[in-house]
Amino acid sequence: MLAKLILLATLYISQYIPTTFFIQTVPVLMRQQNWSLSAIGFLGFLAIPSALKFLWAPMVDRYQLPKLGHYRGWVICFQSLAIVTLLLTATLNLQTNIPGLLVSMFLVFLFSASQDIATDALAVNLLKPQERGIGNAIQASGNFLGAIIGGGVALIMLERAGFRGTLLLLALTLFICLIPVLFHQERHRPVLASPQTGKAYLQPFIQFFARSGMQLWLVILLLYMISENVSVTLLRPLLVDRGLSFADVGVLLGIVSYVARIIGALSAGLLIGRWGHKRSLIVFGVVANLAALLFILPAIGLSDPFTLYTICIVVSGLQSMAYTALLTAMMDRSQPETAGTDYTTQISVVFVGVVASTVLGGLVAEAIGYATTLVLGIGLSLTGVFLIPKASKSRNDS
Image 1 (cartoon, rainbow, N blue to C red):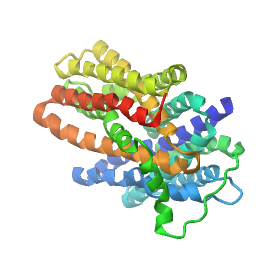
Image 2 (image 1 turned 180 degrees about the horizontal axis):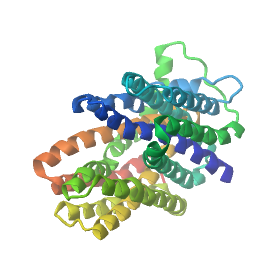
Image 3 (image 1 turned 180 degrees about the vertical axis):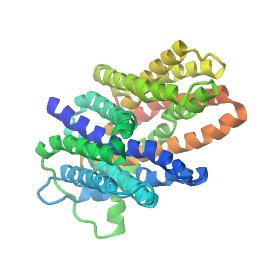
Image 4 (image 1 turned 60 degrees about the vertical axis):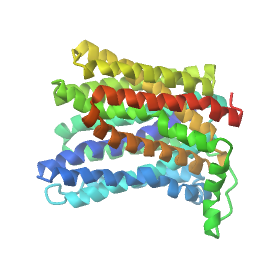
């Protein structure tokens, strides 16, 4: 079990390091060279692979690279491509080649998103049902730790080692994270026959959406994370409005919050195994949404450091527990032979909810205020939580 967890931890950490680094640094570099805010805003389109990766997930399920194993081979391929991209990016002259930097950013997102398909499928096949709670706790913790490394530690290194030195160190980190999968022996599994028609390509999607209760489950996926997305989106400008400096916000949300999320994810992993998957999903969902009401306090003016740190630690930890339970439930709804397609499709549905709630949350908050928007988001998320028993009953979940 320990070997499985180390393998999954290194894979999920590695996926978030380069993407978080580029998200944090490229807008700053572009602004320093007088790019307009509207042009910088279009950086969001470079993350399109994260939303559309379900389109090529069936190919990852169906094909394998010779002599490298199935999902293991794809992980090695895509992570190696990400490492090569970082090394090539380190050779760019940032003063004259911002377009080249944008191409590198897109490629990193593409390779990381594609690797995520294979990593999730590998995890579905690797973990037994009773191991999925702690396994998804490691996944969530790995994501958060990767974000700390790529978005926090790397930015500190940037001032000391420079852009080129930082990228070389990140490439080395990704290579170290690749070592466990190089020694992993993937269990043999039959490969689906090669598709000859468009119907064969669509078959995994048809089977996925035809499962009992799946339509209702997808509605739950859209709603479950809305309150977290709204609160996270609005919290940064809210803290700035309350007079916090960028450094204060960075420490609070970039370090303290992520550490709380890691602790929350690991705690959830232990409890999910004892409580069961459905019960944990419901309980953590309710508690996390009720805790999110605490964000109303800074919204109405209570912004002393003790209050802010207490709220962020409590809410971030509980939201992470709910997120870990959701990942576990999505894994339960993924078949081993089409794990990449099944899991990635669910992640993409969640991502649709993230984008919609992020965009609409800002617009609604501008019209009706922080506090009212937060309460609205919590209400929508709780609606998703209350639908879980009905969706689970159609699958005979326990």
